[in-house]
Length: 365
Image (cartoon, rainbow, N blue to C red; front, side, top):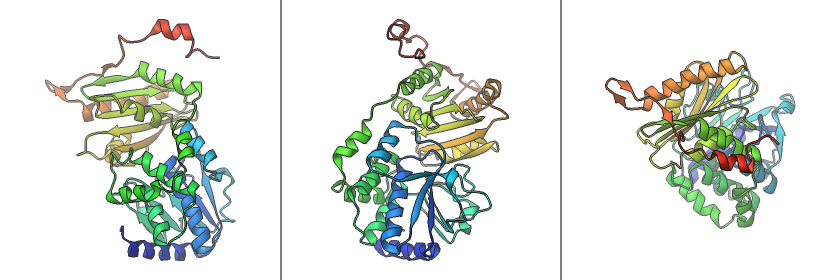
């Protein structure tokens, strides 16, 4: 569904599903630019076309420096899901997530009125919603909202255009990864509407010391075999640091698979996977690694997962980390004489100890 008439039909069905009722727009936990973009565009759409008041909710943390800058500079009004009173919001719309995905704050007993997403798999609980628009072949859910606004001929303010553009840009790696024709068309349509000064400030934010400490830890823990890389971090300053590290390590030459694991303070293991092997679907791979011990999903070359640990002890994390790493190794590392090669340290002979010690960057302050 990607033409003008289909999007107008989708808008009519979305309006009927919401039914003019006060609406909660709920993103996935620890939302990313694509989620922010789609949510703020949907809020604008509901207000202008259907005269519906809506509020954007999220759970987790807005941690990544670019994400914090995006929310602040583009004036995206966010509210914690802790304050979501479903009695006050008869209508709930899920954006960039689905029921039972394990990555949103929607109570299991609640069926949303509408779901707009682009992730696999399309879940059984999703089909119970009055309106469903899930497009796995799209690189960004922001593209769907861009098409809605254009089909409805609703003016797109510069801050929302910038959000949509940045959402598409980040989720498709500047159209270089999993970008459909629809993503390219939306990107080109939005580029002249973008506030380029604010976009530059979003893309090049100042970072906290904790970011570099985590990069340092990830490099120290990194192991590789063939073109496959694995690492882990603990004491994460924010949950999406694992995705940030995965993106960064994915730029390493001759690496086609990166998996990053991280331990949260509340007894969970977060996973972020990047694949450059086009015959494989990252969503299926991450679900195979997580198994029945948590939740996972993704699209194309990007996927994430969450495993619930018995407790928050280092021992529990280490035990599960060993299982995940071994499962990942057997899936990806080529066999040598009947068994996959073992992982070896990535940076064993390249740690600049004297320099690190001299500047004290990774010492606690």
